[in-house]
Length: 117
Image 1 (tube, helix red, strand yellow):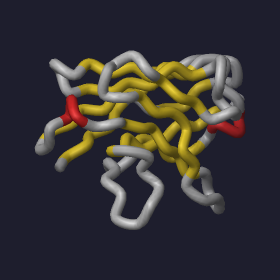
Image 2: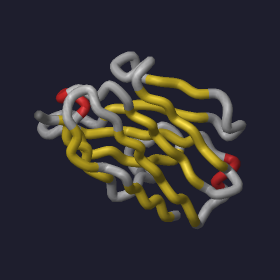
Image 3: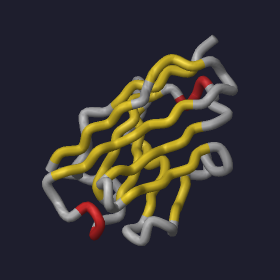
């Protein structure tokens, strides 16, 4: 299983970023996929998830109405569009299979998002 994230960076408050994740090594189209994040000194936090149907999505309250998750099963990719970014969104963002929080969860190496003026 390989999950490769990209798209992180430094952005000012109120700005936008789009994260992408390329998946390989498993039957991507069969699995629920998530984005999770970890801020310095804090626990891993589930951010958003999308079912295998490419349509049904779920969000943490902290990002609802600002972030949008999508996936393309044919391309084996999952994306996270992040708008109206806040300094508290600063974290290392991971693409994950299923919810991505438990021991042994499958996650990528992460991409850093920093929101600062």
